[in-house]
Amino acid sequence: MALPRQVIQLAACQAVFVTGTVLVVSVSALVGLSLAPDPRLATLPAALSFVAAMATAMPASLLMKRIGRQRAFILGVSVGAVGAGLAALAISRSDFLLFCAGSVLLGVLSGTAQFYRFAAADAVNERQRPRAISLVLAGGLLAAFLGPNLASWTRQALPGPAFVGSFVALALLQIVALALLSRLRLPLPSPAERATGGRPLLRLLGQPHYALSVLGAVVAYGTMNILMMATPLAMKAHGFHFGHTASAIQWHVVGMFAPSFFSGRLVTRLGAPQIMLGGAILLVASASVNLAGSTLWHYWLALGALGIGWNLLFVAASSLLTTTYSAPEKAKAQGLNDLLVFGTVALTALLAGTLYETLGWRAMNTAVMVPLAVLMVACLTLGRPKFTSATRT
Image (cartoon, rainbow, N blue to C red):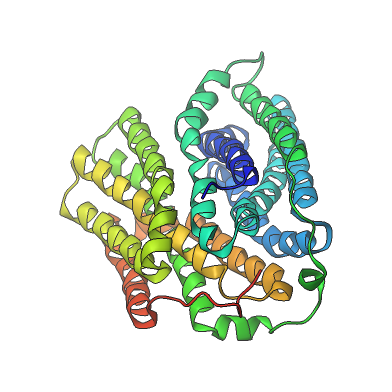
């Protein structure tokens, strides 16, 4: 059965969002280094963006419950456009604090746009949800090629300091997103969805399949982010030049999103916990390859497995989440999930460099196997979820 047009539109919005995200990741630390009064503050703007995304997740979800997803998405993208403009202005004025402010607003965009996948799940029937979620994430595949190249093409596109043009391009991307969102037709929240009540958050977390879905999403992002951010440091230590590192990261991003064309179908056919287990096994394989050697092929293979494992685990965990709440609980259930996910992203982003310097590359790869082992035991214990009328969005 064909998916509705809204899913394709949301995939296009995801492509624009991830393209902008990859652009920012490519240049933020370099801009921070050029503007910061102390080199140790170079990654502060990126860290603030992650923290802002984390802080936005729950309020954004609750706002969607009141005004609808389309209006909330438009608001988030508008804030992101302002943030990109402030960042461009900050670079032109050599103003580090203003660049930090722009990064915070870009974090608000991230905290809002992450709900594209849940909007797609709302637009289809229960059996189609895993496929809808995975196809929206597939929109990020374009970003693997467009994001880094856009950063390179726009680096000196405008007179003045480097990367002003990159953030102007980022603001223009948000205009494209606004055009796409203006044509998006999503239903407003139903009376049942707007109703207060439902189980408290702690009771939701105590529900086995909800806890498993949150654990899966957190472990997926935590493992992927900390190893991805530390890999360039390890490759530099082993004598590889930046071109090798950039190529490895690019194919890692391909691995993150290309499986989305089939991972949703696998979830529907085999069950979310089983696909989560497969994703966790691939993440263990990635860490094992890193432990086995340090040739260029080791890094490429490890990053490829890291991306594919993340995709399987995150798509399956997001799909499982949609089966665990009633309509009045949807906003807080999804908001809590993304709050914890973005909290993990922020924490791992802040700790990756420190852990690499203090523990070393081998110890980091060994350490990530502990939460992965816990997750695998949970997947084997809980088995396949039952899709019943008791779990409705």
